[in-house]
Image (cartoon, rainbow, N blue to C red; front, top):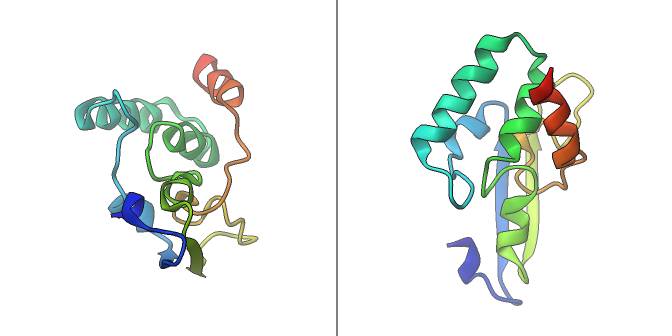
Length: 113
């Protein structure tokens, strides 16, 4: 649906705590089962939640600003209800309409640890 948005389209995106669990779109070339396994491994390794989420955003077609990218050239307005201390927009709902500050290199460091 997002890819069908045109330059005169207004996309309203409502994001709240827990919404990332409802926004499951594995990255191209990654199956749902593979993403589930990656999630399971990250949950079991004991890494901090912000590091786990950073890696998982890189395995998604929607999180970490990818929904915003898919909506181009439409105008996107995001309404946010935060459950995250400090309200970092890239962390709330895994930031589907916010650029991700984590790089692939950052995520590789998480995986190496």
